[in-house]
Image 1 (cartoon, rainbow over the protein chains, first blue to last red):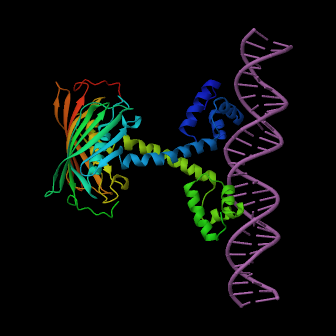
Image 2 (tube, chains in turn purple, brown, yellow, orange):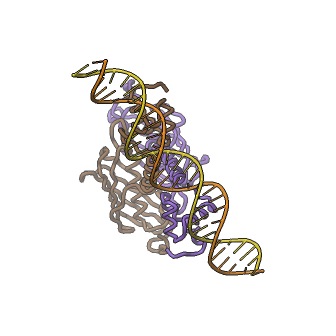
Image 3 (cartoon, rainbow over the protein chains, first blue to last red):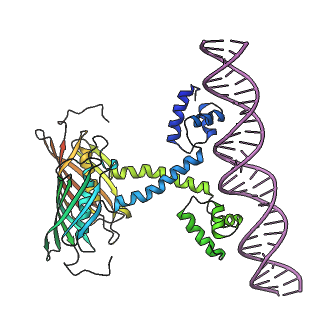
Length: 197
Length: 197
DNA sequence: CTGGTGTTAGTACCAAGTGCTAATACATAT
DNA sequence: ATATGTATTAGCACTTGGTACTAACACCAG
C-alpha cells in the first residue's frame, strides 16, 4: 500500500482493524509501509487496544450473544400472565433488530411470532399446532415500542380437537395487530398428562 | 478445591474450561491445587489449546455468527429466484432450533416468517408492509426438512396501493403451508426509485 | 538556526504460554 | 527389596505480541 499522511493512515487503520480485529501490528506495519512503532503510536492516539484485547472483546461479546440469541427463536415475547385454556398476556419489546432498516417498521413476522407463541402457550396441551391463522397488521410498530398481546380462547371443539383463539396486540392502548388462530391439540380438553412440564 | 484423581481432575478441567474459556493455567492450577505444569500436561492429554487460542476460537465463531445470525432476523430462508412484482422462490432448511423440543415439529411462526419475507421481497418497492394474511399450516414440518416456498403476485390494486400475493410452501413436493398476503406499498407499480439498492 | 511533528530504532519488560529435561513420590510387579 | 511405571513438580530457554520508554533522525515552518 502506498504511503500516505498520518490522518489518512489512521483513518484506514480504524477501518482495517474494525474489519479484521485479528490483525497484528506487524501485519499492519507492512500493510501501510510504516514501522511497527508507528502503528503502535497510531493505536495509542486512537486508543485502539492491542490484538489480544481486541480478540478478547470479540469473544466476550460472543458469550453475551449466546444467551441473547437463543430466546429469539424459542419464545417471542415474555408471558406475563396465563390462565390455561382461557387467556394469556405477553410483552414484546421491539428492538432495532426487529425492524426494517429502511423505514424502522417492525417486520410482520415478529408480531405474528409473538401472537402465535402466545396462542400455543395458552393451550393446556403438550402438542398444540397452528392449523390456520387470519391476521391483520392494523398499524405499523416501531423500534422501542412495547407490544402487549392478549390471547383469548374463543371456542373449543372437542370432536375436531380444535381450539379457536383470538389475539390482539396493542401499543400504547392502540391496536396494532389482530389475529384469529385455529389450533390443533392432540388431547381432549381437561385430560392432560400431569407428569409433563 | 480438594485434590482428587487425575481422571476426575481432567473431567472437571474439560467442564471448567468449557464454561469459562478465559481461565489461565495458573488459575486452574490453584483451583485444582496442583502445579501449573500438571495443568499443562492435562491440557496436552486432552488436547485443549492454550488460553489465547481458546479465546481466538470463541472470537472466530462470533464473526461467523454475525454473518449467520443477521439473516435469521433479517430474511428467513434464502431467496433462490426472483422476478419482481411477479414471483419468487426461497429455501429454508429447518433445524433443531426451529422446532418444538417436545415433538420435533416446526413452530408455525418460522414458516410464516419465510412466507412473509418472501412476500415482502417479491414486491418491487422500498416500503412493503403486510396488512393482512390468511395462512394454513397444512402438514407438520420437521427438523431436517427443506421447505421450498413460492410466492406469486395474484393481483395489483393501483388505487389502494395493495398487492395480493399467494404463497405456497412444499416439503418433498407436498404442500405444508399456504398463505394469502395482502401487502401495502408506498409507491405505485413501476415508478420506483432506481437509486435505491 | 531552532522547534515541533512524524517516524524509526532499540532496549527492558510482561503475560501466557510451548518444549524440553530432570527430579521426586508412590504404588505395583517381579 | 529392588525395579518399573505413572503422576506430579521444578526449572530453563524460547515464543508471540505486545507495553513503556528513550534516543535519534528527517523535514518543514517561522
